[in-house]
Each structure stands twice: as C-alpha cells, then as structure tokens.
Amino acid sequence: MPLSKSLVWFRRDLRVFDHAALHHALTSSNSVYCAFIYDNTILDSLPRADRRVEFIHASLAELDAELRQLGGCLIVRHADAAQEIPTLAAELGVDAVFVNGDYEPQAIARDAAVASRLEADGRRFFSYKDQVIFEKSEVLTLAGQNFSVFTPYKNAWLKRMAAEPDCVAPYSVEPHAARLAPPGGDERLPTLSDIGFEPTNLSALSIPTGMSGAAQLFEDFIGRIADYGEARNYPAVKGPSYLSIHLRFGTLSLRHLVRTVTELIARGAGGEGAPVWLSELIWRDFYAMILFNHPHVVERAFKPAYDAIVFETGPEADEMFAAWCEGRTGYPLVDAAMAQLNQTGYMHNRLRMVTACFLIKDLGIDWRRGEAYFALHLNDYDLSSNNGGWQWASSSGCDAQPYFRIFNPVTQSEKFDAKGKFIRRYLPRLDGLSDKEIHAPWSVPPMVLAQKKVVLGKDYPAPIVRHDEARVKTLERYGVVKAG
Ligand code: FAD
Image 1 (tube, rainbow, N blue to C red):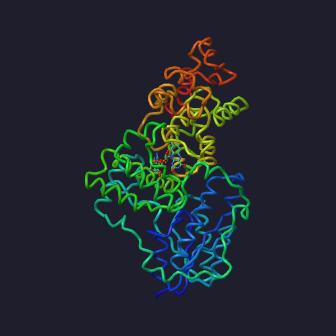
Image 2: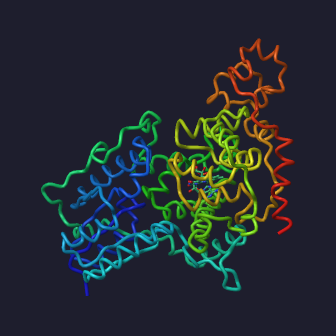
C-alpha cells in the first residue's frame, strides 16, 4: 500500500539525481518532503570557521534551488538531528522517514535512536545503500568471511560488479518529481551566521561546491584520467580528481562515477589511469566495509597486537606534535604538506602517507593524534578512509606490508617532488635553494645557505629529528609486535 506522506532526510547525499532514498520515497509515497538538519551535536565541536560547514551551506542552497525547480523544497533546521527528525516527522504528519545509510558507529547509533522514536510514534524508517557500491558483508571470501586485505577484496568486488552490472544503475528522481511536496510559505535557508559560523577561505580557494561543482570537477578529470596512474603520485601536478569532498557530501553519485569509468575501461578509452582510479574508489568501499564490520578500529589497532606499542608522550612529544601540526619539522616536504592542509583543507594522497608515516615513525607519536588532527582539518574528512589511512601508516591496519616499511621523507621528496615545485609553492622562503638542496636544507653548508638568505633555526627550522636515528627507535618500539 502506498504511503501517504514521507520525509527524506538528507545527510551525506546532497543531490537530487541518482539518489536511492529519494527515489524510493517518491515511488512509494503520494507526497514527499525533503529535509536537512545542521546537527548541533556535531557542529558544536567544530571551530567557528570550518570549510566543510561552508561547503554544506553552499551545497544546500543549490540542492534547495534544484528541488524547487522540480516543485519541492528543502526544509533546513539547526538542532540535535536525533531529536529533530522525529519532531519534524510528527509536525509534517508523515508515515515514514527515508535515508541513505551511514556506516560510522555514531551515525548507526543515531539512526537506531531515530528509528525507534519514529516507531514509537507509529512511523517507519527506511534506510538504503547509496554511499558505497557494496556495503557491509556484500563482498565476501569464498569461505564466506569478510576480507581484511585489499587486493583479494578488490578482485572479488570487480567480479561481483561484472556479474551484477545493475548495482550501479541510476535511481531515477525526476520522472516522479510531481510527488515532491510543494514549498510552504515561510521556508528559508539559514545563513552561516544563523547557525553560528563564519565564512572561510573556501571561495578564495575556488573549491567548487554543490552538484554543479562536482560535475565540473568530474568533467575536467575525465579529460585527464588516462594519465592518472602516473600523475597522481606527484603533488605539484594536477593528477588526482579532487572529488573527495564531493564524495564525502554526496554532491555526486558514486554509481555514476563507477558507471562512467567502467564504460571507459570497457571501451578501452580510459588509458592506464581509469582502472587505477576505479581501484581508489574500491579502497573507499573497502574502508567503509572495515569500519562497519570492525568498529573497534575507531579506538584501537585493527590488528590487536599493535595495541602493545607504546608511543611517546609528555611535553617533548607534545612539542614535536605541535611542530608537525604547524609544519615546522625542518623536513620541507612534510612542512609543505602540512601547510597545504592548514591553508586549504586538502592534502595530496602521497603527502598524507608521507606526513602520517613521519608523525608515527619519525616522531614516535600515536597515530590517533594525527588522525584527530586530519579529522579536524581535512575538507574530505571521512572516518573510515581517514582511519584506514592512518592505520595503514602505522602498519596496524589492513595491510600485507610489514611494519618495517618506513618512508624516508627525503627520498620521498626527491622522488615525488624532484624539482621542489610543491615545496616552493608552500614554503616560498626556500625558493632560493637548488632542486637538489631543497629536500634537506640541513645538509647544505651554512655559508651556502646564508648566501641564499636561509639561516636554519631562524628562516627555516633545523630538523627536529634525525631520520636514521628515528628509524632505529621505531624498529625497537615496534619490536613488541614481533614478540607478541
Ligand atoms: P583521487 O586520487 O582522485 O581518488 C578518487 C577517490 O577515491 C577519492 O576522492 C576517495 O574517495 C577515493 N580514494 C582515493 N584514495 C583512497 C584511499 N587511500 N582510501 C580510501 N579512499 C580513497 N580520503 C578521504 O576521502 N577522507 C579522509 O579523511 C582521508 N584521510 C586519509 C588519511 C591518510 C593518512 C591517508 C594516507 C589517506 C587518506 N584518504 C582520505 C585517502 C586519500 O588520500 C584521499 O581520498 C585522496 O587524497 C582525495 O583526493 P582526490 O579526491 O583528489 O583523490
């Protein structure tokens, strides 16, 4: 029996096309309301200027405009979402609330609380898969277990995709748009200041927002996807897609990305880059699956033996951590990467690996501190991918590589930023150094440095740690794992 009225609660899916929950609500209800809640249980913990909040704010304006074009509108509230959704559902008199599912433990608990409040009021709660291609335990080993290593997971994922191409079929919205409830008279979107936030440098950075921003970035990327496999390694090069913030907030459809890329691959048109990029999207599914099935990773190591590691603590470690956060470690690639993060909210993937390894294995600091710093500063912050990346760097996660793989920050710099182009962009005070000198200024004779107007400890920090010594210490520290 069709539902009379329903409510679609938008969260990480800020678009009107190819939207599972919206599709299901429209095809099963006579009238559909749409809502977004600025959840103050999350917003209250953020600094007052936060690029992600501004990104959401701008993307909601476009979502509302698109819904209005289709005959509906977006109801936006600022409240505790777990309380507000049942209240709004009662105000609107809907029979059911539709959402796209989330795999983070806190979101799962919130949704369970909302579902039970709705149920107590005689309303229903429907949750759909939308954020990933395969969720929970949809991709299993032959023995019926969840995977814990990426490559076999990826092979099984690809096999399942090939067997079930419909899993990326789009969910239509527009043909059913007549069922969108028309806007009430007094609905207006809150301004940033209404929700207690200030503008950031988001527009100065020209980060495109909303569905149109995502489409523009994807179109640009498809034009250069063939080169992705190689270009993605070099932080000074426009190699990656920069779509992560859009994947985070669902201003694009993952199904659409996967459809497009698999079609390119099938036509032999995506060069070497398209399969590599698809693989990155599969990493995203993989980490969401890991988080869902192993929620202990939020607090602890994926591999329990790694919980025995004792990291540095105390004032010296705190000072080291502050130097890392502020990009004053004396290692130019690390410092430039942290400057990129602090100034823009983005950090190139290779640099995420380099800075994370540096914090854990050169400074001996607990990966959870770095993870929390990234969580606060990354525009694309996503619990599952961030945690996966940090556990990878600490060797405690789903990785077949041994823990003694320790990145050398200087060799990484020489290899992936050979001419120091990226370093020069973020550390202009080192611009006078040659392509060879820029990776390790401390190894340049002070007289030569002085000619180039760089005094170590004044114009640029001396290295806060020696990599060779730190490496030995880390191998000792990680020895407890070997023993365990
Ligand atoms: P592209 O190279 O164009 O990749 C396309 C998409 O694939 C990305 O947008 C992302 O959704 C996915 N992807 C790519 N690499 C990975 C990966 N290693 N793991 C999971 N998904 C991936 N990614 C986040 O989205 N949010 C995070 O909070 C996050 N934290 C990270 C922390 C560390 C320590 C590390 C090593 C990696 C982290 N990543 C995170 C993964 C990766 O660095 C970013 O997804 C990528 O840099 C985003 O840029 P892009 O969209 O241009 O990527």
